[in-house]
Length: 121
Image 1: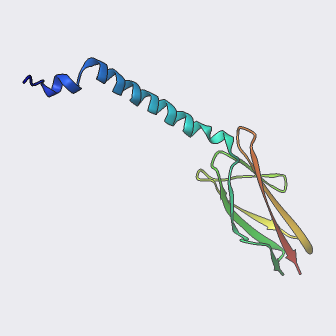
Image 2 (image 1 turned 90 degrees about the vertical axis):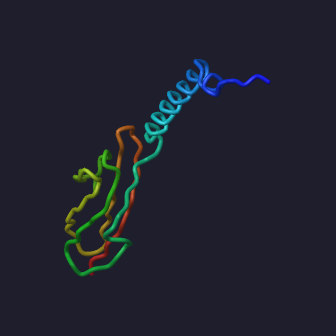
Image 3 (image 1 turned 180 degrees about the horizontal axis):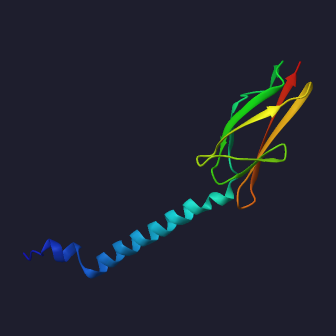
C-alpha cells in the first residue's frame, strides 16, 4: 500500500492557481455587482410629513433621506442633502392645496419622485 503525503496531494501548483483564479474572479464579480447600482433609481424616504395632511400653519418643515450621491429637488428647486443623504427644508405654504414634489436623480440619469400634498385651512 502506497501512502501519499497530504501536502503534495492537495497543495500543488495547479490547485493553487485554481484557488487564486477563483478569488480574483469573485473579487471582480463583487466589484461589478456593487457598481451595478446605476441600474436602479435613488430611493426617497420622507419622514415628515409622513402622509398628506391638513394644517393651519403657513410653513412646514419637510424632512427625509435619499441616496447620498443623488441630486435632490423640491418643486424644481435644488435641496442640500448631507453626507448621509438626510435633508430638511422649511417650506412656506399658501392657503389651499400645496403640492410638494421631491425628485432625486443619480449621476446615471435615473430619477424617482415622491409627491405630498398639504392643505392649509
